[in-house]
View (spheres, rainbow, N blue to C red):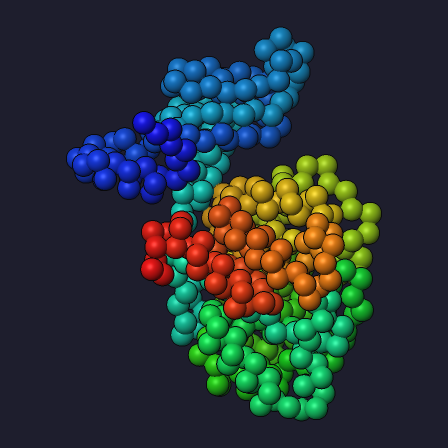
Length: 405
């Protein structure tokens, strides 16, 4: 006898196939195989009571504040428990209800659909990256003199040794990089501002060379539209914006160029101030809400919905405990319906836990990266590519049926 914890429908389907269940039976039972807990924030007590009664009638349940049942509270959060089948039927029943529950029905159904969608294809110019079959890696190439991790290539750039930089890029690709992320300004906490002109001087010659010589897509790590425009003109195919596409000009640029974007959650206006006076009323709610709003603005300005990646912004305006909480609940970000990228490489929270220097954080980075993937990340951004790549190959083999075996 075994007691199984089934986390996804794919697992349930595989188990039923192994014991010889009829395909039609699998189709019927699959929505009943996995249970979920859905949190609805700040709804009226009337709505909460209706939700509870409807879920009880479907064989599920809903947890509400005691004051909702006694009539002392006007509004409350509501935690709904049920299988995918029950939640789907709940959404149908709520469509006919008043008190704003019709809107909640649409949100519930949309969230479930997004949460279930673990596989997609990301198109970056002529490149197509399948997401969900294996973890994709974005390799970091810093062209800055003040890289927090001490791995900057600025000295080679200062000597105009582009062949050496090309050699490093080729090595990264050989070790398994799926994307090369080129940055000309440090985004570490308290980093010194770099002018767009200086940033362009750093990244332009490198991107121009790599786009012609390297057989993987190039990403530009910048929040300045002027820099992004030059990078795209030279062959970059992805804009990695730590400010979350806050600038309307950047959104319009990405839309016009038809390129992919990474929308990163960052608290504060810039890296220089993002770590000051950090406070969250409800961390996950606020970060997810912030990313949702940024995605909506990007799509309204014409950015292709299929070319948007989200990044919760580990270390960008968060304390160590915030970073750990987000990584532990990373699967919640799937309700936004976008691929999730995470950058934990050599971050300060790992240094705080281990007590090691930036150059000695490979083991901590590997652990955080693997667990991020287990929790739902589809792309990881790293410095120490080969070590992390090996760890992720093992994780992918365990989670995705020995793909590499």
